Image (tube, protein in one colour):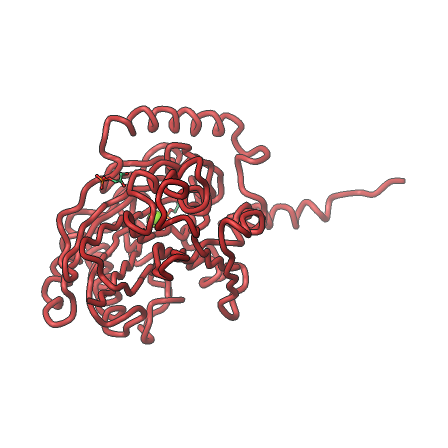
Length: 366
Ligand code: 13P
Ligand code: 13P
Ligand code: MG
Ligand code: MG
């Protein structure tokens, strides 16, 4: 049976700065979706990660469907009304255009979708990250899908021995979708050359080479390209199918124990380690650290089980401790050097304005 899994995610307001949506806001979105789900959705799951709300839904209408996108857009608008009424911070933050125009791509909300031939058992993980951008997934998914040091299935499972195909997008090119397809293991070094630059090259999707089936879909929107100015980081969502021809759940989770440094953190303008957190995690230290949550599901004919919280296990407590230490360590050097993003990536114009002023005061001597 062909099923579409769609995740649409937006920040439409939060409590106490950029920490978390209010219960009333989440409830409004849940109610809105529940009232309109009949005849459109098979199932859905509403959750929050930091200040972002994600609508995960299953249906048979294919990716980019106008009705599904409109439903999410209107749900986020209804949420924005509640956010405004209760004075939440950044109400409507990610709804950058006033009117819906058929598809939320380019309007602000993040989207990850895939249409699949549902397997006998269909396990998948829904990841959501806050205070970072889509390049945050480059390293963990490279390691999970292309490196036998992390994914033992690449050498143990005959179903995975042909490797995976990566579709990588140049997100700095905004006129059209600029995309390249590279295959692992033959083109590993080419994949690495691109994925090292997480602000420019971003994994959009990954496919099994033995079956051609899609394993991964990642939201690749860049809000500051859409808006032309700072509107919040492009907090990314991802859908990852697991087991069988794909890596096992634990192989996909394994690289998240690195707590690798990603762009984002305070004002979307710094570098911080990505902390794997429990579902519905909130935000704290220095508007961070950047967080990622994971909800694993099984599915039958589009009907979802309850989520299994993939980072809710004693193992991840020790990881969180070491990631917190990494966060404190890089923060000790404040604005200086690699702890703050380069000028091209700063989410505020203040530094550029100051530099322009100071430029006039430089003098030249031989
Ligand atoms: P969000 O992108 O999650 O809204 O965060 C914005 C910010 O400025 C945090 O300091
Ligand atoms: P099972 O043998 O329990 O299916 O587990 C296989 C596997 O993928 C474990 O990582
Ligand atoms: Mg926010
Ligand atoms: Mg956010």
